[in-house]
Image (tube, rainbow, N blue to C red; front, side, top):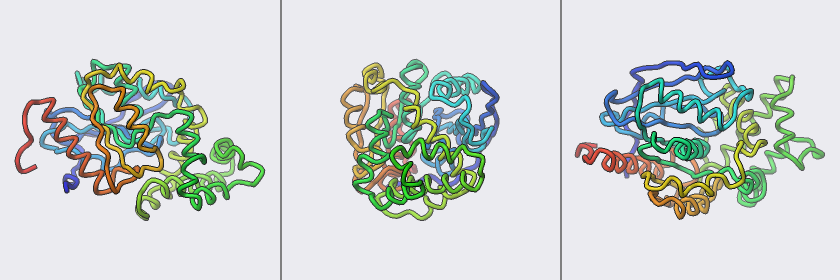
Length: 324
């Protein structure tokens, strides 16, 4: 089973001013002349992590990480003002132009994978390939599943704790109730709501208990951006038309793509990836046994690295070094 590549540091870090007062952090790692790949984090609001540099061989790939609006090291932190799917897609294109990249591979998980698919639909000529983990289609049924309809049947204890943070008379609409607390004037209440939101998110993402993941979601800085921005997007149906991705997936045509999905993904059930693969001619679905939603579980790490190697082979017509 393949493991992550060794830890690396960026060879360049920068910020990009975009619209409406937002300034985005980005970094570049690996081989400057290598095959460009943009890493799109999930959440939304999670920001990039050092681990995400390590899915691609730094001898062959130019690895680019971007903190989306309000996330990670981008400013203003945890902001939902002027923060929508369309604006994030504009930001991705602005970064491509800023870095003078003709075409790139997009690598994203969950919400990041959603952005990758939408960007490819908007700019197919700029995309050489896609690697999408934990396919999330942002349909109303996906939102309903996550916030009660399905996930609560598998994690009733975690969902009960998630709702317990709210007064009984507000539990009928958890998104609105959390919105009020995450955006209220009481800082203690904001942080408490963010931690409760993060605790639920961490509990249902992995097949086995992962204390490290839970600690990440409880980090004050990160918890607030994830909770506020994720709530913002869910309340607005991710700023998409109903079934927008599946209805247009055929337009992805022969763009090569790997869909990496855990069989026991509770955040976004496997059926989402299954339906997408049927509509996208150039895609291959990799169903990962013994895995949930996150990228850090060993079987998923193995699949993602294999997808990166195969993507490189297809796009360059060369095989990675035998030592890889």
